[in-house]
Length: 351
Image (cartoon, rainbow, N blue to C red; front, top):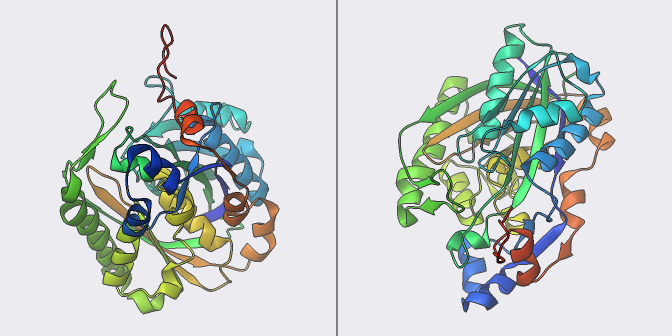
């Protein structure tokens, strides 16, 4: 099957702490942080959006892949915060990395799993011989209404994967998806912020789909949790992530590397791809990775991946996840609100 030829990430450098948000709304910061397993989150600057994040991640993926971008035959950008309602982000990325014009491109939406859906499409195109390389990106500048619980976690970041069949750093052993019509979270056209179903988002939505997707993948592969060295799951918060991992039989040693929410929040479409990248940053040849995304609406994509020898020569060619996590500058709520367009000034339309 197809494999990962190169991967790249981008996380905005600005951060806001849970304590800063809680102070504004009179919440108990310690209780929020402990309950969600989130300490701080990334904040996009005023000139950063899903397009800029995608371009930076894609350029870093190309640094690791070291291929001619003209050989990319497909570009897919998965996000729920595309900067344009009618104008693809994928064409912006393709032009910026000098991959156009001989390619197919499209934007994908499936809440937080649109990025992994793009990876599956690229896998299929490569395996079918229709393209030599496909570029799949999961990126978001997630929205959370002022004082909403989402405001503590909704963050920004993304990861890009160049998928092909030659000179791979890791190979896909298989993929499996579990999908139903479960409307746990949604945002209407033209509305600035999403709505969510509270406790309904847990058992009937996130856990049902993540656990079912994971179990379906293991049944398909004939594997169990102990067969993998690393595991990563979608992480709307740290609490859900850890609970899902433990329910499936994974140990802290297996799931800890991919857990990024406590440090950068929930990057939505970028969450599982970023967690996977963090694992690839430290994984050794021959190790196996288990990855499961989740998107409200609802569905999960699961992957079984094996790391190969090429990882050693490619992983240092671009910034690693931890490099970007450590490169940070804290902002207060006023600056955060300005960057996120939460302040509406007379006569001006928020971005």
